[in-house]
Amino acid sequence: MRALVYGAATALALAAAPAAAQQSQFEKYQKMVAEGSPVELFELSGEELWKKKQGPRQASLEKCDLGKGPGVLKGAYAALPRYFKDVDRVMDLETRLLHCMTTLQGRTREEATKRLFGDANQPSEMEYLSAYVAGQSRGTKLAPGAAHPKEKEAYELGKTMFFYRTGAWDFSCASCHGEAGKRIRMSELPVLSEPKAARPLMATWPAYRVSNSTFVTMQWRINDCYRQMRTPEPNFGSETTVALITYLTVTAKGEAYRGPGTKR
Amino acid sequence: MKRNLIVLAAFAATAAYAEPTARDVQQVLQRDFHPRGQATMERLAQDGVQRVCTETRDQPPAALAKQLEADQMKTIAFPSGSLMGDWKNGEKIAQSGRGSMWSDKPGAAAGGSCYNCHQLSPKELSHGTIGPSLLRFGKTRGNGADTQKYVYGKIYNAKAYNLCSQMPRLGHAGTLTEQQIKDLVALLLDPASPVNQ
Image (cartoon, rainbow over all chains, first blue to last red; front, side, top):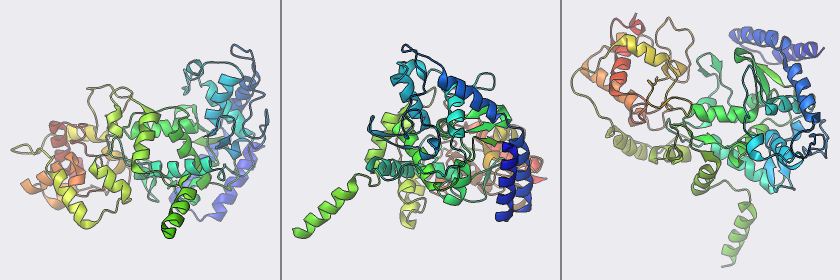
């Protein structure tokens, strides 16, 4: 059923945007891949982990407040990142999940962050949970926090970082995501500073990656871009990574969430 | 006086979410990143080229660009004699996307990631388009000493020729060795290279 809905949405998108002939082949492939995606399996495993009692307090995450109240999942992901009063900072999904692991479950940050990014053989807890929580926002329009001064500050910092040239190879995010119609090898590169490109992209993250059978999150995406930018490694859940995710999500606001997606 | 106060008040009102200054950003980066493998924290400090290109969104004033390009030119150590190495090695270097990442083994042979952005050999269909196509580069330009020198220099330090180019300074950054750059010069200029077929 979901595959049908997705297929219809793709068909609509195709009809609405006059795509170049070469792109339509690519989109057909994407659609084919999406229909055979194991994303729902990740969501199911994520639901089990959400309800599983863990840590010194033997508590589940079911009382985790993702911004809409303790345990409220419906539409929560689409409203992230946002400012959280209890920690006086902006958090994205993964940063907030980590916060709930340390507070509700009593786990140490060290233990909970030991294996954030998984692989094909063993996906990580964070990946499963991200799939589950994000899936509860399907159909909800992206509406990240953009009113609180700290949310505005996060947006500005993210924007600055997006254009900030650094690292051994002098790259900024815009080095690869700054000009329309460009590719790295065969990968098309969306101009993420523009709503037109950011919207469909942010509406489908996190995502299952067919090429290496992994489920990938936004924190992973930022981390792996910086790896290829030849910088040191960004800290998980740091102000910088959350600011970039805020900037990208605010740029994509208004788009109906339809992930977790399926990528090449 | 009154005007100054109004300006100050307006500044204070927007300061909470104004664009971060260059110094703020460096503080944030030093706090939010950690060194890993060969990727040290020093890499986050912007040099003059990175700073000017960031501040002008890659559109530096012409006079400043000319001056900084001249400074960059001085970083290039041109070897004496022929700059043409082995195009077969050059092709391998152009294909490889490894090198200078925290996930790369320090000291292991790096690549130039050339195909990520450029078309080179017509046999390689999986090439990027961020940089210009270099198909038949030597065929159209010949392989004289000046052309060799230009290609060597451009790969060693692309910012000496175009200050805010998106191309990494592969020699200057320590990613590629002198011999590897010579092999890439051959890939572009040797008449036997697939690039020129």
